[in-house]
Length: 169
Image (cartoon, rainbow, N blue to C red):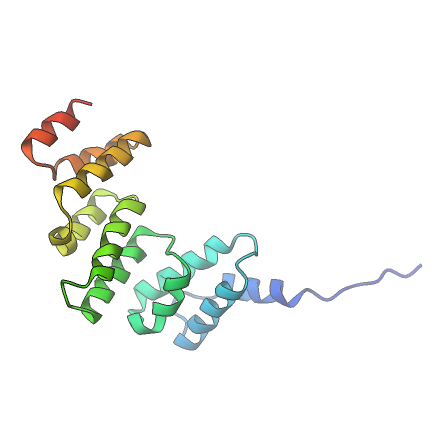
């Protein structure tokens, strides 16, 4: 009995190619990687490829317009990428009354975990878009999720009465 052999499936071959893709690859390969991720969302371990694409976006200073459509469909994995997207979007759309931009800033603040450095950088760029009630909601979310260290960083930005209240929790 002869054993039938199969050639590797093309999706696996491409997945492996992009997994081994150097971070300093040309924009054409970056574009191919984004297309692969977008059309193969069902593949296992895709988060590693998403992180690779995000790292390439940050490290290579790829223009926002080049990644805008991709990130409108696929939410960034990393907080650093989410912040960079906001910075880039803000520079592309500098109108401070842009409700979509304000909504994106608030959603990023709510939906991502920040370390101290990330939070400081975020607040330097976007504190003007956040009010006390947004800080309170983020604090309560973090306390509810038992992320006390992150909550302590946010509490520092509350008014004195609220800071006293939440610091006692």
